[in-house]
Image (tube, rainbow, N blue to C red):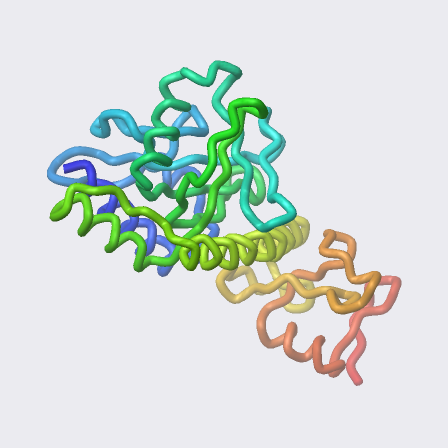
Amino acid sequence: MEEQIRVAAFKWIEEQVQIHGDVLPRSLLEKGFLLNGQRITLVGPQGIWKPKILELISLSITTVTDGPYNDFFTKDGFLVYHYRGINPNHRDNVGLREAMKRQVPLIYFHGIVKGKYLAVWPVFIIRDEPATLSFTLAVDDSASISHYLNNNLIDNVPYIADDSTYFKRNYITSTIKQRLHQKSFRERVLEAYSMQCAFCSLKYAELLDAAHIISDSDELGEPIVKNGLSLCKIHHAAFDSNIIGVTPDYKMTVQ
């Protein structure tokens, strides 16, 4: 059943995040996983992606870096995701509209840097805006997946969000924007330093952080590469504690 395929995909994504962190390589998502002998891919050539095994509603939606669509967060904390093309009745757009009507959960991949994506799920379509050729998305917690699955398998009715669910989704979605900034900063800084610690040259990515030279709490502490250092966790802690530092001519100092 399609519901079970969707839930299996959520479980697989959760497992990959536990292994790789919540920024995943595109190659992993393109390969996907096997379910009952059939391969389920998580992304494909189109941003609105539906594996062949699913009938109409996509499994995932993707925003790529420097892509043709200007997806963005609204002032009230939700995400605007643009139609595929300009035809509201394109099959992919119809599928997302059906996902909205039935409140079917999706996976959202946001490109952090080329070939790497922050994975967010479950995501729901909450509004359809034909005038702007866009949908509005909201993120929910994992409990909504069970609610959706139970309703479809037992009651055969869609998951209808009430006011409390709306505000919960609003809060959860608003936190995604901050995560995107943090993950984007980390990936760009680590790439600039060739995925190694600037002080000791440690090359294990899982042990590397992107440290702000000027603190992000400072007005000038922008999350940009020139304000970042790729540091292993030990040197990051020492840097934040002012035990070690770096001079304007890129020399390390020890207090």
